[in-house]
Image 1 (tube, rainbow, N blue to C red):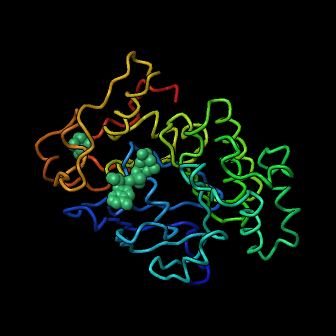
Image 2 (image 1 turned 90 degrees about the vertical axis):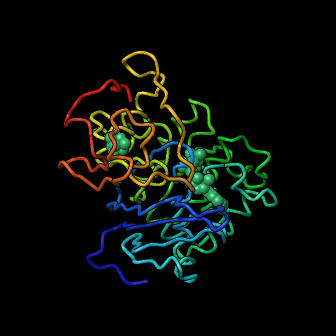
Length: 331
Ligand SMILES: Nc1ncnc2c1ncn2[C@@H]1O[C@H](COP(=O)(O)OP(=O)(O)OP(=O)(O)O)[C@@H](O)[C@H]1O
Ligand code: SF4
Ligand SMILES: [Mg+2]
């Protein structure tokens, strides 16, 4: 890994993922790029299967052998990382990049107590003198009042909400410079969702890490993120300040996602017609072709390039007009 210099804090450039086990290989993620500043909160939003989780897993080198990851450049916490280097990946996991996995219960090891799992992580952190004291403090910090008792519990003895908090504690135990939270609240009921999000934001203030928040929940993205990236079928559709992208979307896919919300202001929710394309049969042009209300013939064959308008960046031949307000003001 190179030492930090004039590099951005987080940069992922032209990141593509395919899977060998697909009969004919299609891109699960294609030329995906983004940057983030220290302490910034970036939201990544998109339909199921759009490539949100594999992005995080690939940066930690946790994808299965069948995955082929091709990247131009990755910088995490100001350091250049070679995803093909096992030693780089070992150094990255924990102190540089932490991840709260999508499934809080199954991502904890069912064979070991919470205390044992925290001990394993904390003993690798050179700044920690006494892992037990630190573990108790971490559990208290994530809102588990009877932390002492919980250290002896196995994951199956905890509720989904408690497992989620333990996962946050595990991710924070190595004080990561960048934290990816993959659907951190999806498995939780609404009251716990808010607590977990507030907790994450408090910890972000305290530790000043960059937070990459992956979520289906546009309300969550609008409330907590500085910037957002919209993904569809493995490709970036739109990016910009979260509120701008969600209030004045330029890309028809972002607009369609918002109109599919049940509390959309213009009345009934409007489902997006059709299905996400099969990775093996992606349209040659725009990947949203076939489901888009604004499509024309050229969209089928000509891939849209990045256009910027000062605030938004988007990939579309026929974007919505600048500052056109639409009916999703409640996100
Ligand atoms: N091990 C694998 N082998 C083949 N394809 C895979 C594998 N893992 C993921 N994929 C494919 O990669 C694509 C992206 O998957 P990913 O799990 O990142 O979606 P996601 O956006 O996180 O969806 P969700 O919102 O449901 O969590 C999907 O098309 C999925 O089928
Ligand atoms: S490029 Fe065409 S098909 Fe794609 S989102 Fe824009 S208008 Fe729709
Ligand atoms: Mg996912």
